[in-house]
Length: 589
Image (cartoon, rainbow, N blue to C red; front, side, top):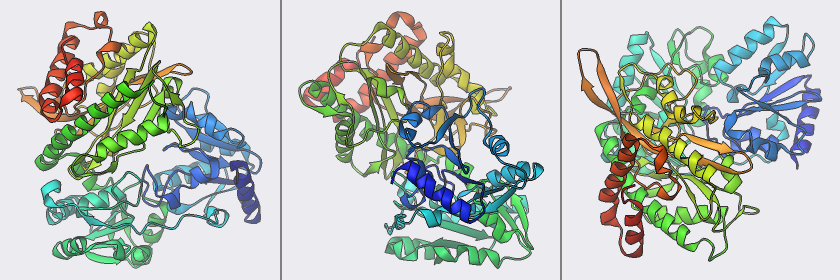
């Protein structure tokens, strides 16, 4: 079926149930960014594959709201669907709730699936709709419309041992319980999959590229329950849960168990699904606070930090071998964006403890590089020749850590304009890397450092500058970020983040440079404790697209010092023609 036909089926179901508007969020019951196949409802309905965005369907109109990362991609994927694109964050774009109100009469009923709607979204919707005499209802209509929904995964759940985790399950639970006590909570629901996995030192593969599994945790001051498809746990995982005093319960028993809680003070994150709040709202006290383990997870312990350093060498070796292959093959063999991504996977797969990609590789040739989260399909992806530029954003999941790297470079002739923009974006990466900042700093305070070189040219980019990265967990990890929007979470030593400014010229090219960086303590003075960034990613930048005359001496020194470090750490693992070529990349500017 086409997206247009699917929307028509949904409208039929809406009419049967007296629903005037139906909203499909990009979410599952665990509010993850990346979703298991059976919960990719918005993608199934609309054909839009971006990781962010939601669709609103009325009796005669439909709109998709998404952010700047997808302004180029979304129109292509929505073509012929009858769904209009609403560009979030752009002046003139209506708030989706205001749009719903403008499109409906008083008394209208708006429905969502409570399992796939965060409590925060529900409250916002309900407050505004009630004020304007509209009604909000929990009614999962797509359960009827999407008749061939994929079957949930039966993939193995396995232990993430102390040698990689660096902290025991018992110690993590004890630390979370202390935070619960401080908030006056006697119970705590953990529904986000990466928080479940981190807390219990378990990993799985229910979500593509993310080593997580479908589960909930209910923690009290005395007990810990893991609600999961128990058959998926291997023997080591089962023994770890027994040793850690974690009781296993069926995944489907979670809501029945919640409904039996009485006279309990329950700590629940506001971004948990609405069905959780509905199950416990009677005869209990709800404490809406972020998951305590979320910040603990973000601050990597020494073992995790060493794991990142280890996998960066492996990932860097894979990247250099891949780049050597691509540079020396393009123009001689038939290549396309998809086949290049598969080849990159092969080089990573040669490395020790490689598990899989950390996200779908972005291989954008020429103008496709301007589509920020471009995904080349097996059929119809662009042919790649020895001309123009290419942007490759990729990463790997290893038992010791997670990687995320972007390099943009020339495969042949590129314009002086491209070189200037590539240099300007690189200056942004360097300026952020060089930052030193006091304890208490938030990401928004540093974001301008990465954008300033572009701003001075009247240019910018429509995505965040930096996100947290998990330790053999989700490549996009909160709660910290570096972006224009205010995020109240302070940056702290031990956090691993991306540093990825870019520039995108639709119809011509895309540029992004990305390294992962670790926040470390620099010094403590009478004023404060100050932090700095240590670069973790190991892979050369291509000097052929850098305009040296645009750089300050400080920036030149940074590039030369970075390449010296890359040479020292990767050189011993390379040989032959690859090493000779690599050595030419890391010579001083």
